[in-house]
Length: 507
Image (tube, rainbow, N blue to C red; front, side):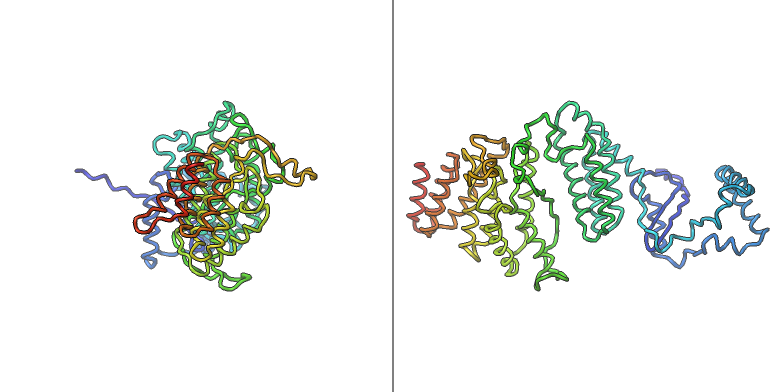
């Protein structure tokens, strides 16, 4: 097997305060990442620093030369790189010989080898043109040839940069977003009134999640956040920018326009929290002692999950609500609860029950508020070993499903804002309703299992099931579950549970 001929590449790397600020290589490889020759030279410089000769900035070297040496230096430089630098050298010579030229109005001359000023920003080298070209190429492939996988790799690279506090993370995401906004399919979908594909939507979701990470970064300066906010508003004002709920005006009626203004206020979307390790790290300058980053993260997650929020329009947006909730709860389930975290759970459960209209577990909620069944089931199982009374109170409060009621809860009809909140005989298009009802059934089954042997609680759970569950198939399933739990082989039959099973079966 004949080996390839050895090639010599000319590589140049610029450093500034321990960062590679620019690279060039004659190999001609075009990629977002450094070529093998740049990596090899960087490793050589790191591992054998004594073998790399250091030079003064070129301006200092030129300053030490006399007239003859300067002339020889210039002429040899032009001779070696005749075709590349001769036109530029001739142009500069003409400008220097002209007394009125712009170059003679400036004292001194630039020196790219002198490095940046201490006040100048320094960041790792990023080939912006290559980022734009590759994203444009991946998008043009329309989801084929693994383009979605390649774009997800780029997103993963941005996450890695953000984790390392590399300022290029925001730069790279800006370049990616600009190419997404320039995708001609957005305009085509808008003109045709059709929705984008689910795979493409998932890429936009990831794009939004990364921007959320950037703008919420506590280490960023206010001026940076202001510039990003300005840029995000600019993108949002473009006609082809996709709506978060997936509606373009032709797919489904926008039900949120018919809701009271207060019902839609301050509804924030939850991002995905991705963490690999869970342990307490002390947090500084906080109001209470004993708090850690883990307790704060858990508390914020519980607050977010428990917020009252309106169910968005469109199938994709509703599935996204359920998916995000389940993903966040699955992350919380990976954490082992200790005494400190149990206190957080107790405190937040009480707050959610007493927080009023801002809480999805408050006494009064909007008819089209996102149900709390999945979240309440997690709260119930977490609190049950430590505070059974609070666990049942939370779960029973979450059992309601007002969207299936014929009218919203009545209020003080003498006040106009209460009249606006009553929408009789209107069933909004909840595409995920079957999933929501199954989660309601799971919550009820969990309570029945835990209440075995407790007559008072079994009667309370039965009453809640009869009041809030409207699906006959789910009621029958609960009757079966109650019968199985009551007649387990390792214990005597539970008479109360058998009665619950009978009542549910007859219903």
